Length: 86
Image (cartoon, rainbow, N blue to C red):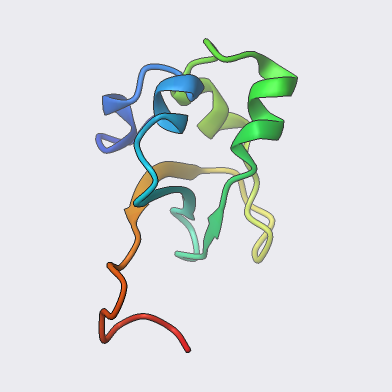
């Protein structure tokens, strides 16, 4: 059930070491809701080598309560970016 974007990341630990300018997010394929992932908690619970594909199958959307989330990495804005929040 993994999306094409998440297949780039073999395991949770690979996803964690993407860099300081990136944050892992989950996106619901049903309603589009996006939320940050508690990656440290996921690694503690399932282990660092747990496949991203399997983690996607276990996630549930907080807004619509459906399964079917995709894990991706969002790039943070650079300091001074006009898109940055307050």
